[in-house]
Length: 151
Image 1 (tube, rainbow, N blue to C red):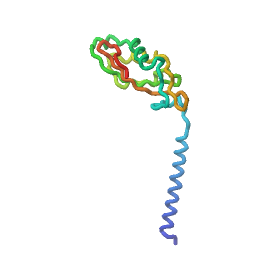
Image 2: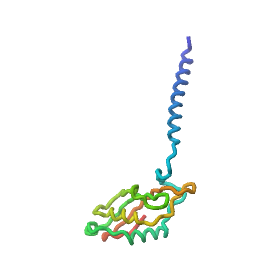
Image 3: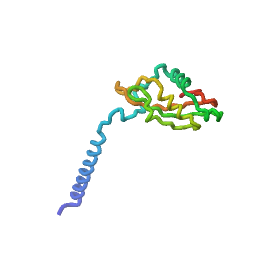
Image 4: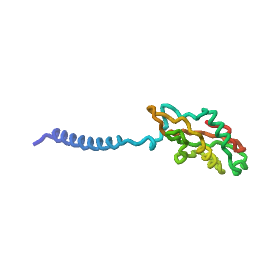
């Protein structure tokens, strides 16, 4: 007759083997490569840069954003928070860009239009390769619908 300890050892070994098989299967699935274009980075080694820097970005946005009458008639400003996705070439990828906080009254649509018309940034880099990058901007509007700050 086998000792209870021997039976427990065999049972433990069986459980370890079965668990190891599942772990190996899960590990092999996690190693599947995804192209960089499908992945959007939040942290990169080299940040994207607008052609004229942050001041140039602020100037471009101020010069090109035009709030609709429905917003300006309201007479009060506030902030819009938007997550912008830049592709590997530094262009805004509008399909992945999201308004996180809105002011309403039609203020979002012209903002998205302005963002889509931005010239290309110098792209974000990881391991010296251009990658898609997500950046969040807080955009302040005054009561007349003009951009007064971008952070």
